[in-house]
Length: 407
Ligand code: OVM
Image (cartoon, rainbow, N blue to C red; front, side, top):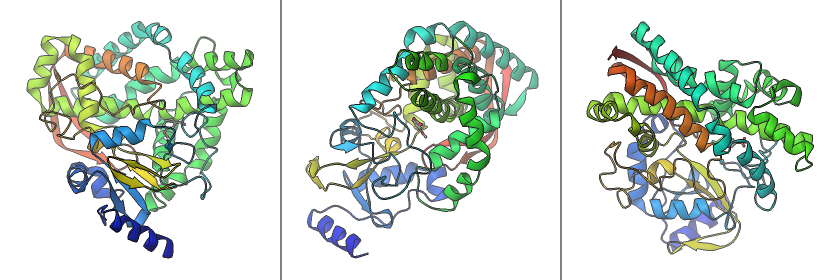
């Protein structure tokens, strides 16, 4: 505790507000907007004693910390745990949880696998799947927008694009939820999710092997890099693991949250129906408005300052992307969902060398499903109250009953 008290004296001297909030409390994770607002109002940075953590939620400072990989490293973990001190729950990701120069080599391979060309080749298949699913949901009338749509669609296209032969929706969705919850504090939620590791991790690791993947997929491109001696066989398996960690829950959440936005803002859905080409801008605005990945950490590698605030080496910094994406200093009418906004510079995919490597795939999935909805659905009724699913890094719905009325 002496360490924390010394820390606090330094912070008081530097005029950094101390805030006794728990960013990982269930209510905060389910309804984060008041916390986002208070965080931005308190200052560029606040100190959260219970986790010995600095947090930021204003756009400029969050962007600065997030994009400067030299001063704010990822190799000490992008969750609360500092890998210099605590043992990670799994072998660290060789792309997310590393720094240059090593990062450059793995990032090059994974971005080749997920290149615009590779994704472009999948567009017709995505559109056909999206069309069939929306037709099915119109026949059903009422359904669960999470289970039947937001989860169903990515799981029907992404694992196949990777080249997976054995597909389990529950294993894939739960592995993502586990990996993202592991980024939070050592609380009950984190332990509860990590209990599932003994069942899910062996299944995931089996699917990452060369023999489990069919030719022509993202996975095969990664293994081809091992054949060309750019990576070891083991590193190739680890990069496929990254696809399965970050490729499902993120797109599930992005699509689910977009349906939530459109259901609550019928005038915006009218605009999308009038011009289905707004599918992509509508998705970007939903990403800005709801921030599917609400926060990620960095660790200061040097003594430095950001926006005039001194930050000491070894400090964990919680970058609250959800708060930055709603910062009225950056966005006009930040609290309004407007699909014509074109929110360039939003932080929902991060920024800098660790910016989402799968964003081209995510946008292609979203475009396919939102275009099918714009063409076939007359109106979206949300039935009852949507329920949010608390997660330490993801802001996602747990359930939302919806009716699609036929056009
Ligand atoms: C990874 C990864 C990348 C991005 C997010 C993430 C758990 C994991 O490389 O495993 O979330």
